[in-house]
Image (cartoon, rainbow, N blue to C red; front, top):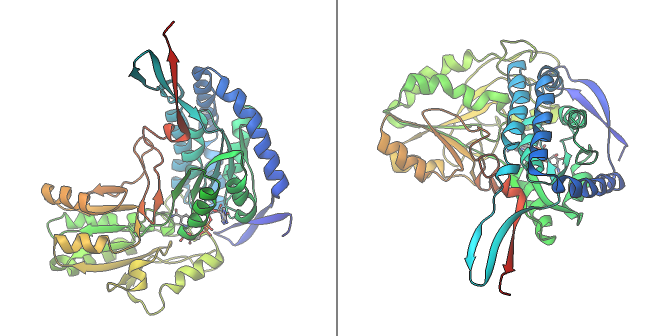
Amino acid sequence: MSATFTVVNPATAQPIREIARADEAQTDAAIARAVVAQWAWASLPPVARADALRAFARVVEAHVEELAQLEVLNSGHPIGSARWEASHVAQVLNFYAGAPERLSGQQIPVAGGLDVTFHEPYGVVGIIVPWNFPMTIASWGFAPALAAGNAVVLKPAELTPLTAMRLGELAREAGLPDGLFTVVTGSGSVVGQRFVSHPDVRKVVFTGSTSVGTDVAAGCARELKPVTLELGGKSANIVFADADLEKAAASAPGAVFDNAGQDCCARSRILVERSVYDRFLELLEPAVQAWRVGDPADERTEMGPLISASHRSTVAGFLDGAKVAFRGSAPEGDGFWFAPTVVLADRGDRIARDEVFGPVVAVLPFDDEADAIRLANDTIYGLAGSIWTENLGRAVRVSRGVKSGVLSVNSHSSVRYWTPFGGMKASGLGRELGPDAAEHFTETKNVFFATEA
Ligand code: TXE
């Protein structure tokens, strides 16, 4: 394996930079520094850790534009989205900066003494990040992990390491101690695997494909190491006949084509009640055609390119034999462009079941409420989903019936840093974000103090 890898701009297919590929010894050295830094970090008063995270947030805030431009270059995200992502990192840091002083334990009544619990940090946490949302997903791990008193080693995806590397530098600029938060660039099979196998990494957070996530979980099981997994999705956007169809159709492209469909929460199946199926498609077509695909640096762009040439050919493979209803547009020429595509699917079709991770949506009709729930659950995944109906009782019943971790009624929201996020079934294990995330980076210690003389 060569000592470096090349990072490419997906909008132009041009190389940007050569990045060092860490080997196992370099990964071990980062982990060893993290062990030392963690001891000192966890010993600080909670308010000092809170202040340090707020300082980190302020430095990120001051660099939002730089981070956003870097993400446009490296990931092809539209500039508006990239600015949101960079600001989100600062908000996540600020939110979890409130955690060190709130990690309260319990006092439990026990005769003859005092029984109390402590939320102890794991030690060093290894975070493995994918290429689809390089900054935000990294922050969902490192902010609560640091807040809870851990050190972090973080491995970005090889395709998109630039913003994570910059965040590592900004952490040092903000005054975080050396070794506390280290970004280690390299391949999953070396750096990522070392996080799994190294005895001093006491928890792993993995976001990526279900197949690699399953291997990571198996490796962590051998080490008896807790693991949080955020994996794939095939989320349903369920549209009932009683819904505001105009609103449901107008918002459907954004729910699946945002980030060119490279989103684990993409509503990549639209399930439409049969009586309004034709009408919905009529309304959807102009919305898809109006979806602006182009230069990610242009403020008006809604969707950029796919991440790589090889990913584009994987996505294109899903259209073999598929019944394409209509497509939007995409630029010609260099860059990994792919036009938004709407496919009419039957139950059991590959396009209706497998994660495409591209701007392709499958539309399927359903008969009634029970059928909608059955169809929504007819997938190995269970991450997100949307339910469009004006009937409150139905909204409650369907949201309880769909086996997904994050649902939204009459909207497509999935991610708010102060609410829990994560998947059921093959979409993952554990939850990120929300009020309890810092606690997920601790283990409970129970101490009994005898008071009898
Ligand atoms: O993911 P991988 P890839 C899905 C999506 C996509 C497919 C492949 O369908 O097309 O996965 O994407 C590191 N031990 N999702 O290849 O391989 C790797 O270096 C430890 C869905 O990028 O799972 C990277 O940092 N780590 C998902 C991270 O794992 C390993 C987001 C993810 O890589 C490793 C991304 C190993 N053996 C992809 N092998 C979502 N749902 O959000 C690789 N890695």
